[in-house]
Amino acid sequence: PASPAVRLKTGTAYVLDREGTDDNGQNYDNFDIALKPFVPSAESRHKSASPAELARSADPGDAAELQWRESRGLTTVLMVLLAIPFSRIKPRQGRYAALLPLTVLFTVIFYGGNICRTLVANGSLPTIPGVWLVPIAMAVGIALLLARDLSLLRKPSR
Image (cartoon, rainbow, N blue to C red; front, side):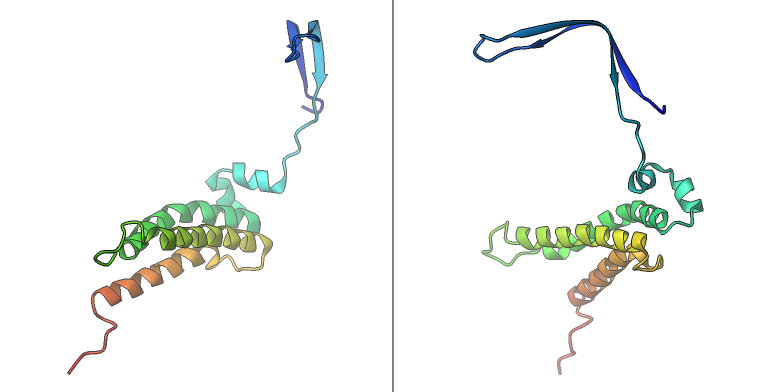
């Protein structure tokens, strides 16, 4: 509504002093509290819109939000696939040796997705590839690691 309010019908409010010397109790009956009206920002509008609304919109912020929502599932699967080659350790190496590189990789992927979403919303990055730039880079990285593991990138020995 234009002027939202809360009405407290009957009750008592207590403010207790920790030392117990200045306790305060207030009784109220039909006490009205005026609130500020909620004015949705552009960002909260993007986040609360349904995927169908986002798909119909021509606003780059809506396109960025839709791409970000759609890319989260694929990014999660690609992160799992990236973690496999990074989790391999050498003999006599501690089991937590790969933890720091994987944590840094996760942070780069997470913030990279958020930066791409912001760039698409601002119009600095085109909607194609847009937020999909991070999953594409991850897929290329997985392909390179897979090729290395399958010895496709090594020179044949004579």
